[in-house]
Image 1 (cartoon, rainbow, N blue to C red):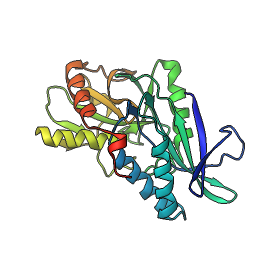
Image 2: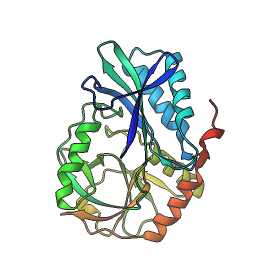
Image 3: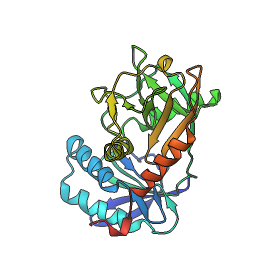
Length: 266
């Protein structure tokens, strides 16, 4: 994924070498997909970033708001982009950085593999664990999987390495999510899907989910990068239903949530 890394100083984003050894530990990060100027739930992503930065760093709200405004000005209204905003640890203190990235092709399917490894140190904050979670995904890639699903000590589903997991169990019209009491990232795309469900009159249930109980279930993998993806297979796991028509209908509803990035308040 080609990208340019910018560092925020004063009111200016200046390009820096992304591979420099002083790049610093990631304290907070967030990202969202932009397709021809349209973005889903951007304000929720920005709010999650603001909240996490305030809780984990000494950065004030004024520089954060100036940084976010500068970032939005960098995003072109044409093309597909996957911007990433960061607060990183540097010798001079927490520093704000922006990765201007071209988005990969949008995909609608995923192959899952379970992992009992859980490298997360900050499960409620996006950023500090991203590299460790990427290693989880890399570890399952030789199995043919495109996403790793973290299981807890009891074997219950927690979340994907870079995604939330929601389920329609076999024969049910209830959308089931992992309990919110489970230590996991508050997924923005999951919240968008839940908002759609409520508007559509679809019942939502929180329940502990085990892979072995999901034979013939429809499993969705949710992320800001790809929206709603259908899990088509689970390596050494349950046989999944492939309800493509349901996925496609809800992907359209997800797309319809998009707003023009230039129409959002600055």
